[in-house]
Image 1 (cartoon, rainbow, N blue to C red):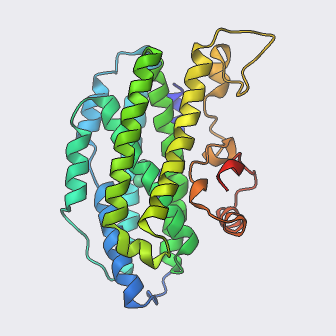
Image 2: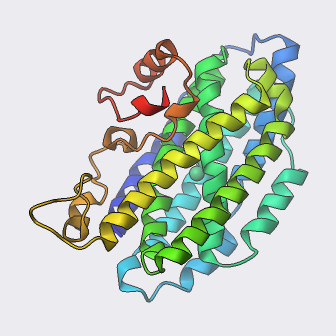
Length: 308
Ligand SMILES: [Fe+2]
Ligand SMILES: [Fe+2]
């Protein structure tokens, strides 16, 4: 795993969150939008505010592995970036005149679940939340008219896309050591836990989703598409890794066993420019997609046509 790329990425990117300027106009949204939005964002804020103590402790268990050298440092920086998200969301909730939370039932279950098994499971549960967050912040960026919410959502969306790549790199390193049958088993339980979590989140945030003109079923459908997109990229890497090398027939993705290094993330590329755009399924129409990419200032057009 190219951990140095992630160390460099987090060191640069997290600083941008601390420096992010938010529009200073007061919230002009009507109460029927403002209140459910503030309540919903306060739950996400609580979820982002963990100190990462157990995750850091887990990473010590793999510190000796050569292919994950530097992972501990990358995780420290990843946790710091999540904390910068918590700070941005706290500013957003305050802007919406909402109340920050100290405890909330879905967050308590989420924390309990993360520490149930081992490092890989902890990362998987985190990843589940990040896949859901990507749909959530994508919808906010597209459909919420408040400029502060839009600015924060857009930044968090881009960051979470990077986190998905980070978690995929780690899971690839771990899953490639399993047999195909065990990989399938892992995939199945991941899908199950992801879907269960999505149902709970869609129900818990239903009032906020209503203000964004999306039903819980619509939210679940987008979340499932995001999961599929993430998993298919991971599957492709695993397949390419286990396939016998054939110079005459190189793998379609170009990520065969011999070219792993070339497929690692390069510091000069944004995740979406590499085509890692799990976030695109939340975009329903071509017009929404056009606006989204314009707002994000992304010049390259990723391989997401299957989702539109
Ligand atoms: Fe985050
Ligand atoms: Fe994240």
